[in-house]
Image (tube, rainbow, N blue to C red; front, side):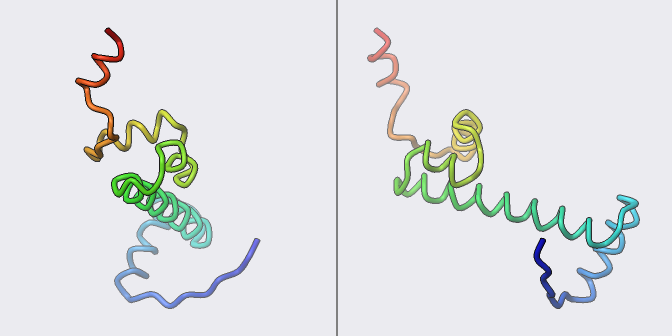
Length: 95
């Protein structure tokens, strides 16, 4: 495990103490969880951005976001990202 040091503002420190108290766990554990969640959210946001710009495929976006193909498809749908395949095209292919 690596050690990092960061300066945070007074408000962030108070928020951190409140979360620590609410979760009834030590500060280091709270910080690890918050950082892991922030990294996951960033990866998903970045993958969706690249997908929207048609710079990556859905499969590649899923890999970048550490998500399954189905999860990424759901995330893309919720973000109203055009997948380049319309409902009309799907119906035609299924006919």
